[in-house]
Image 1 (cartoon, rainbow, N blue to C red):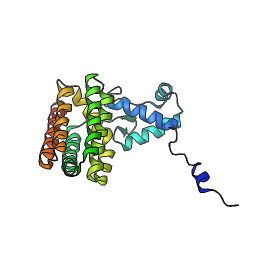
Image 2: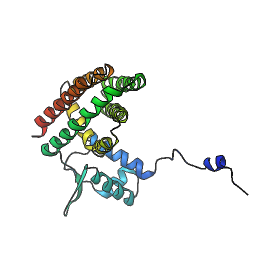
Image 3: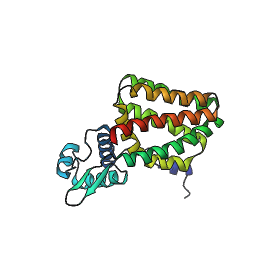
Image 4: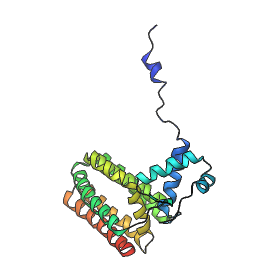
Length: 226
């Protein structure tokens, strides 16, 4: 008997629930990015098992994943620690951001239509809301959404893949710079300038605003880390 394709399609799980490992990974990632676990702090498996309420095997998987993201490093005879923030590493990340993001926003400015601009405006409204609430996690999510739309619109999928792999370390640097005076205001304001140039379909101004935003963040990070 032939099977109905529509019936078979109904078997597919399109939005599978998060696994325990995924939940633990996200909790630990957020904890490190927010500074709950400080740079250089040892990550003791037994303690993490109690804090997260998961098995040691889950903790080990999470630590391996965070090591791949650059948030954790393994030390001989000590085990995993929260990766330290070094200016030389941060400088390279900002250089990569400046190169990839400025090109993406320029191409987005050339291609953005009313629909794209509406999506960007919505992300900016969320950024303003979370900034007013002084909510770093909300700011990170809104900023990531803003840039995701830009890279999607510009067609820079490979560049976005590179940025996504660095996203945990980028987010960690963002939280660090947000803790300084006025950055909670100046950061979103500079992103607004990027949007204004995209809204005007002005590629050169968009790229310049993007570079100015990244350079400002890099200057703050250098003051803290150098």
